[in-house]
Length: 257
Ligand code: ADP
Figure (cartoon, rainbow, N blue to C red):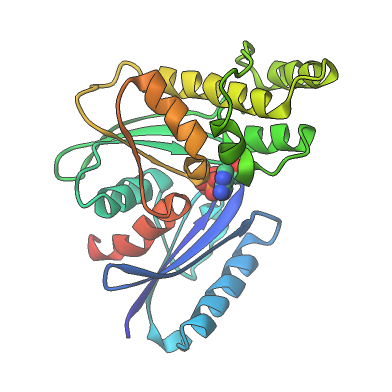
């Protein structure tokens, strides 16, 4: 079988996907640590093993993401905005026109044409607030893994108001709320609402006719997704396997080259 591999060397997580025809048949994400290309090689070997395949069944390997510059000659390279655009367009069945990617260290808003051509994109990488990294920092202060932020936040009726738009100030706001004995669930939901306001601000000014599609690791957080929907006053769809959209787009990009 001809397998296409997509490798996203992200700022926070390394993602590897295997695609057979258009189907995502294997995927794995691990935290980004030094030696990214070696980790990607190990993940690729793990994927081959899991699929009971050998390296000669690999049709193509395409790298993308923050660390793509580390790749030297072992595979094709595509920029992450192009990979994200293609992945989101294909995984949405050709419906995505506006994509919001909440990554580890930046938030991107991408606009596509009806044929999936990149029209425009905006990126906030100046400030950690609103990114996965910020959630992880808050998770450490609150002694709570980010994977359960969504579940905890959804049950809250009276979230706190977090005013700081800067991660450093928001961090001290969280610490002082904890010192006052405020329940962490209320703080978490306050964070979701504060971050949703920032993300909606970045998306503001775009043509708001279309549905919005969300991807990136933090799109797994349903309370954040709901807060973004409320801020934007529209339905927001989460792409399937949202943390792997970019790697999937990289894998499928060989079809368009
Ligand atoms: P990058 O490509 O920049 O490395 P990702 O799109 O992989 O970023 O997103 C990484 C972030 O996703 C992590 O910082 C983590 O906070 C968040 N994340 C991953 N899985 C989940 C989950 N199940 N629930 C909430 N957040 C998650």
